[in-house]
Image (cartoon, rainbow, N blue to C red; front, side, top):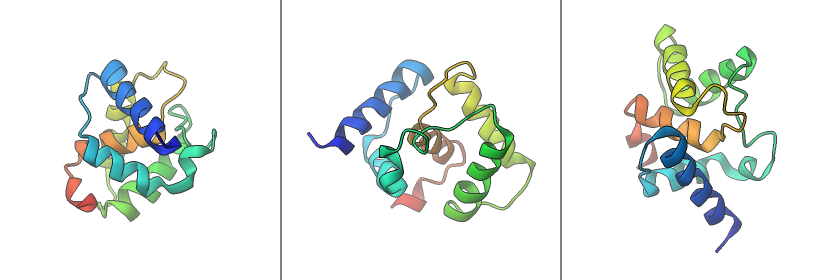
Length: 113
């Protein structure tokens, strides 16, 4: 099993255990591939849910640039909803899991087809 496959299994387990979601493995794999080498970097592979600057980066670089969503208050509401689901007190919020849930939240699965 490759390192990426191992990480995908970890992300799927996080979705199930911490978020109560069963992962669409095909979509999760595509989200992980889209993140590239950042998944192997301890700092880049996680999202600091309590840092406003980090959440702005997620909004600008992922929601607006990658998913093509229009800027508006609904974007930050979506991010906060996902962080709540993942658990604000959970220290390790994997970027791949957050991005996967954002794709689902905004119904933008077609971006990965």
